[in-house]
Image (cartoon, rainbow, N blue to C red; front, side, top):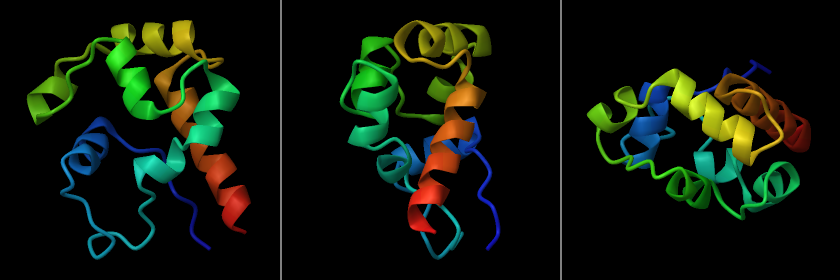
Length: 103
């Protein structure tokens, strides 16, 4: 089984806009599955990824919205609101936990 890599900001945006489909990438993991309620409760005080974005006052609706979030700002929000030091670490752990669950 091919390993899934963490989502890039562009991939995150496509998912949030509903543009990424299983037909485009059969190995794609929807964010609702990757950052599910169990994951978010385990690693933060929030119940959903949407709540996490809202708490950080991130308005994510367009490509520009994602690209305009400075990496340092998003990493600080992740470090403050979760038990991860960075966005990359959060994505990597979510992907690994998801893969272990579906094996």
